Image 1 (cartoon, helix red, strand yellow):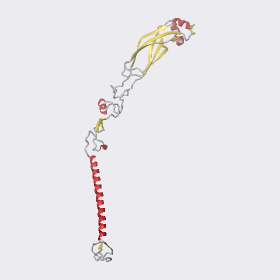
Image 2 (spheres, helix red, strand yellow):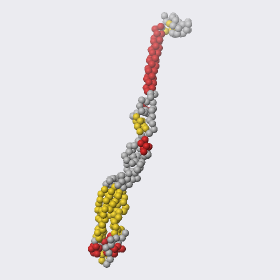
Image 3 (cartoon, one colour):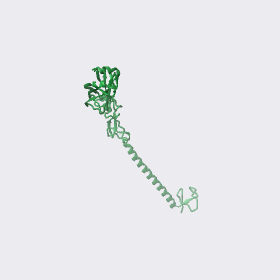
Image 4 (cartoon, one colour):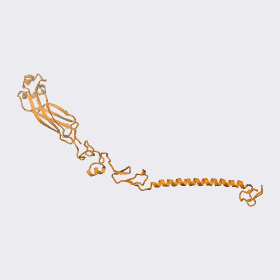
Length: 267
């Protein structure tokens, strides 16, 4: 006997359900099949919702880690914990507060503030050495060259003077008429080396420059000291006409001086 699809009452085959007035009816077996499909779909939906809730709760737990207090000296935003900053002049590195060295000179900004150096300039006194290695970072280290004459002499060659001139006219300009000598001690009394030392030894007769010798010394360290004797050959052609008479008179009015001293200095 078939059953009504709506109310479930038995009705003769091909007849209408009096109560529901439907034109179509199915068997109880078919009705049970439809019910089973509904149950299966419902169970699948329940399982899907349950899995969704499980994953959602798992994410909530993970997100909860980002709300935990920082267990270290400091925590950045990407640490997985609440941000915990360092004090001023410190930065967070590997969960530790490290003093900042803004200019990378080996002194922290805290130390530079303490001693008065510039935390934004690695060489506050603008000498050769950065603040971190400079024993006096606020005082410019610099070489200081001291030149001292240990002896001076002027050897006139009066025989050559007579041979070089006839009637007051120089006829042999290349003939040596004098050989002045100067022994000089060079000392670096500063607190830094210099990569060069340059100076001139000037030879004069009656305050007139007759000749000069250019001296160049390479790198000269702090405390370095040496002594050198410099000799200069003066020829008849080096002597101005106005000095010929003085030379002939065997004058002692001569002098040796140091001029144009130059070396590497800071700042």
